[in-house]
Length: 414
Image (cartoon, one colour):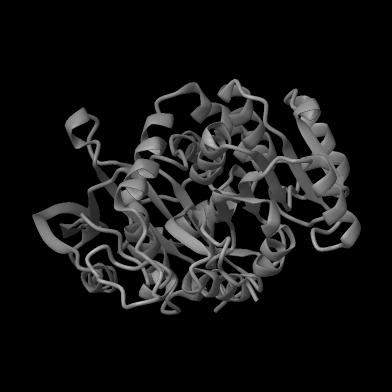
């Protein structure tokens, strides 16, 4: 099954409620005895936030077939690191691995959410859910006998839990990273700086307490398919980098605006160059009939038009390359954002002569569902450049974004 896991939006709420209500008559999943409504669930839905207590949907062929949400375990501050999760799957798509994929993603994402423990509340007679959680290492942390009455039948409640000290992810998604404890053989790429990786995570934690967090949350919701953490890192890199910013694949301006905000707050003169060929896109949240028109409007709406040089064209066309070189002048690129097609290696080759040593790199579509045709070739390009010593990986953020640095002045990209 081609499955995409993404942040839920309010437009998804009717199908979310439909999936939930279908479980009520089973008397196995929820303690609700009557179906609920979209209106009743709207305040509950709005309590979630993508960077703290997210709400995700699983989508297959543009149809929502399951969902998972995080919520506060208890309101006191000492319990901030513990979250309760719930998983629901459409009745026609159960036993297809949907719940497993959602739970797997939840465990993998806990470090970036600041969550150290996950809790699940499951009826004792709901064996399929208990077995699912058990497969992922959840243990029985609590047992409340006969605390629920479902149609006159007393039912037990089981509390399962998992301590999330380390990220849980597919090894193949991280094969570009070399363990800091491993001694590389001669000629092998050196391991990434452990401190640099921690510094990026710390920067994200600090930004979550600052006004830029809420500002970029609004930008993300309106203009970007990137995760909020990625936009915060784009802002961060644009703020601290030495050199200009080049973005390939601006779409309607989410990352462009984040980069412009970073330059603004740096107090320095830096060029922001955005490449976008235009076109249209059908999308539930970010559909547009004219990408370039909406991009220009969004830049103007946030007062950054005069900070951004917008070049209309494909990144690899000779006239586009020439226009970028002309816009840069003698400047080097200190931040490169790649969020266009799958030609990551090609785009890097087009502009490698202008990349500063240690240039920050934000590369989207590194991994993803099988339905994303860009992920496999993008990952192959990035892994090959890491193996050649041209790229230094520093982490993976959001749904599928690779973050690192350019080390390739002497490395071959071909």
